[in-house]
Amino acid sequence: LFEGKILKEGSTEFLAADEQVRRVYLGKNFKLRSRN
Image 1: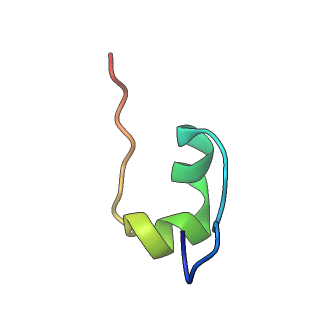
Image 2: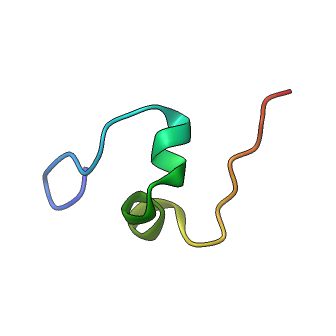
C-alpha cells in the first residue's frame, strides 16, 4: 500500500524490477537474491 492504495501487484520478480516499487519501498540499492 502507498497513500492508502495498492501501488502495484505481481510476482516478486516483477515487483523487484519495477522502478516505482524500488523507489517507494525497496531503495535503489536493493538486489533480489535467489533462494538457491
